[in-house]
Image (cartoon, rainbow, N blue to C red):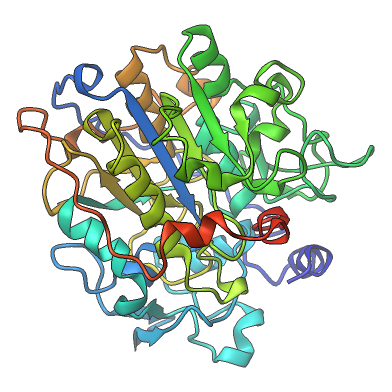
Length: 445
């Protein structure tokens, strides 16, 4: 749905709670799980591969020992999930859509979104055919599938990517970014006069009432890693105007600092050759092209092969024995999920997404039920490199409160040799993609 139309729908109040803004839930305690594993003694490289717009059940419904039943609730009606291909609806996935689907934890409103009418009222109650996502299931069977990974915030890609590098998107302790700005590319290079949107502690959204999207209100991992002299890279489709999938272009410290020409790497396909050339950074974020994403709008089927190619490039390099690879999806994409996200602050947690943890030290065929959030990834990075927290929890940072990923590892085991993952196409396909394919922004919502 176009942004302007989406805002008009929300402003009409068709989404529950839009105008009144329900009171923010109280802070709930969360147990931080720590096994005492010596992460820093074994992990020298953390790679975060970010895919697009899938709920846990949309990819892993029916997975053994995971919380992923083959049915869901549509209001009071029990609905069986139906199989789909990558040719499917692009379901709304902004803040208000997530509120409507979440329905105060009932998880029964996934049939309430207007733009799925052409696909049927229960279009969101679906899972992708397993043969199409074989690389993801292969990773789950060999390594770790986490069935409790929650985004920091309800809503879509813009805030998801900010929180994946910062653990927060708070402008003040009681006000955060939400949804997206009113002009692309949604960052420091947006046209003058561009404004962002905000959400307050009563969960009231101020459409385009926020600041210009070039942020210095919160710290990111860039400042922390730079201060500790830990190398990092962010692989994006292009250096400039890559859209919401390159969050550091919206961070003033990076956009106008020394990292911009050094640590933002384009095109993203360079991640397929950098490991073999000895150029893998200590901390890495990786994003795909639009066509190689799992975004439903592009109706492509190469996303799983793209991820497998990246994992294979690292697994077949000298870095494998010291690497931890985290594969996750930036938001749920509007698809059904049965697990109500714990509400830890006024931003969320958001609706559950899949998460795979691949490493020679990852537990074998393990389904983790530990409550993870995006701050868990940052906390694991901090453990690996002995870094301080990004900031205090009462200012909105989540890395201190979050459970680390360390319980998904067994550092007493010998590092397992890497076995290449299956894929529909080889890495050479992605290395030979056209410049036009690499330049298109992946998402705008």
